[in-house]
Amino acid sequence: METLEQARTATLPCREVTAEEVAHYAEHGWVMLRQFVDPAMLARVLAAAKAIMGEDGDSNPPYGIDQPYFNAQYGGLYADPAIRPLHFGVGRAAKALLARQDGTGVRLFNDFYGPKLPAAVKTRNQGNGATSFHQDYITFAVDRSGGMTFWMPLEAYGPEAGTMSFIDGSHRLGVLGNYTSYDGRDIREVYPELRALPETPQMTYALGDVTAHNHLTVHGAGINTLDRPRWAYLVLPQPADARWNGAPPEAFDPAAHGMTPYGKFPDAGFPIIA
Ligand SMILES: O=C(O)CCC(=O)C(=O)O
Image (cartoon, rainbow, N blue to C red; front, side, top):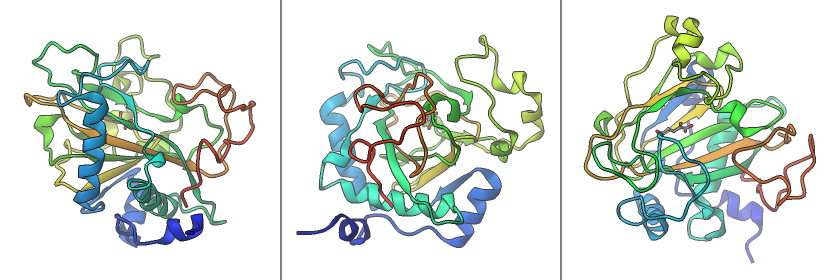
């Protein structure tokens, strides 16, 4: 029987990241990983997404996170042995991007589908608006930075679908508050220093291209002007030694995992992926 270590290092559906990509991520707070994932794996993920969310990306049971950015739905795909190698591939890349000097690895913190629904359609769930610019870090109630999101479009998309844009270098500005705390204002108004930093155009992704962004990097996305969902699958690694900071988390239920403030994330619920 294959050991976990063998599974983590077996042939993976993701390539390794290059030294240039690691340097770009450290400098800019995000990186485009061209042709990072095997499209056959993305087809599996898309099938799993549609099985729970429907072709319209809007027929899923409620998930509990209602916001205009996308119609969020928990993935839980680590449980699927056919898809788990994707998480190991993400883990290997995330560990390289994290670049901790002591070699600390990463655990799988969360994975979810984020179809952005068409702006012109009246939808059942929320999720057909723009993604206002925000940081992720404070949402996750962890005690240290280093977390990141691998944002995987499940089809080829350009800006017309509402793809990601990053405020370059914003990960160096520290923690800028929760996305719900700006009283309707734009984060760039609340923190005018963000306007001094370059804002990338919305990205164009071929199938297999993925962006990774640091949870301190400010990012956003436009509306989806297509007549169908913009399918995305988000995989979120955290440093393996991150702990729950005791604040109310959006992404996990500490009681369900028997967690205590500043206690470890249990490997059973948050597996080590590299
Ligand atoms: O998919 C989007 O539009 C936004 C994704 C996002 O906000 C995130 O990855 O934190």
